[in-house]
Image (cartoon, rainbow, N blue to C red; front, side, top):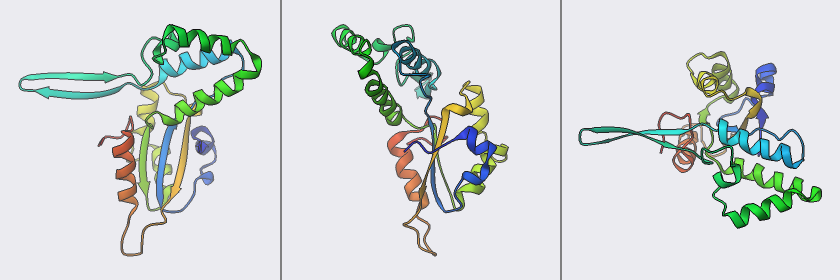
Length: 193
């Protein structure tokens, strides 16, 4: 599910598969440890660093930019940013006091990250070649976008889905890529659903 760390891929490009398919870049930082303070800091980090999804809206003569924060924008009150009521926040904080529950709560946060829109979805006839272009910044601005968003390469993971639908005369990976993009609206994909 998580895939390979971008930092690992940059250091060892041979970790990328050579098959045709779709690749998905996700923001997926890790907590420092399973303690209450580190989990709260972890959630604050996610709220602060997850890229803002911006869309330009034009109505008649008015232009506006709509900004969407996937997890709210108040990292000082991270549980409120999750949309929790005061009662639920108290329940969560009580659970965080129980050391045996912290790893399970961390797993919930990890699943939450998995459910956020990915950073990018792409497709390639040879995934390793395309990822190499991204890494070398040739015909790709993706790493520039990550750098501009202050996202550590160690917090980005890339997963790979092999294209098993295409036939020699019929490439289906475009279809797979478009379906994933339309459903998830990746943050750094130019043509969002």
